[in-house]
Length: 370
Image 1 (cartoon, rainbow, N blue to C red):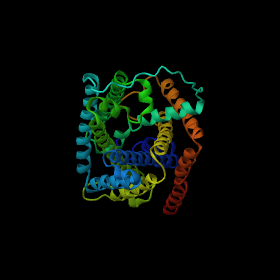
Image 2: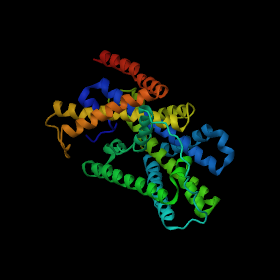
Image 3: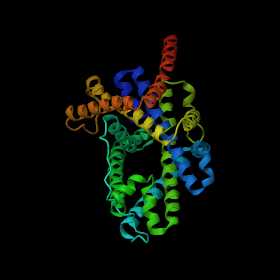
Image 4: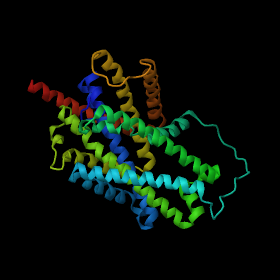
């Protein structure tokens, strides 16, 4: 179904307007929270380069967000060009870091492994869930190409390639980065550092190594944030076009950008920047992401039952057992994510609940029109 709006498109077709709105709204919120988190991360890395900005993280993050908004406001081509260049640069930077840590001998030896034994309390269930939530969030966004399926000239070929090659590439990069760090630093030193890559490069280049990592990390975070900013307006544009959101968000400027949808997205994104730091926003994004994926996975079964003759260019292997196992696993994780962080869960449920009066209003308007 090559149609703008992303994950809510099959959910709406399978379960109707109400659940479709819930899915689209949640998907939109997850990208907004993710973009806000990346804006905060960009500001924190900028503060490593310019220490005076350390006392103004939220203001700096807002400036980064507005810069990305302006870039995408002018048009699709400008935002896409920045994203392509940014992706190439950040991939080059990551592979360069991996090669340097593996191949270059450090001038400063790593801190020796401590021989002291410390008493570690057994991990509780909520601690394990909270840790896994960060892992889940780190891989969030792998479904993003779906949002551009209507703008793609060969969706049935390019979309699965984009999804699978991205997953394989990113998994490989994660593995190589961690392998390089484990070869260069003791585990205790990695555990004590928020930026172990910077520690490894400082052992090789001195203080300059930390600056290199901060600059590269700023590039990575800004590029990732820009991709989220490109996706956000397209989700509520699709909702608006299908009558599940006020029609004003379907306005498109000369550059091809849904500019009203972009402005609405940026307003909420900047508000979230001021509500909490990286950890809160990251967990919020993870919880919202798993909620939309649960709805998305359930739509596979709904569509098979409701539209058995729908064209299906690629197969769901081991259906229904493997997709059902994924659905059950993610549903259990969703409950654990919400209950392990009561404040974050309350914020997530509050944000999701905002769509209820919107849906009620739009349903009433459709009834009047009928």
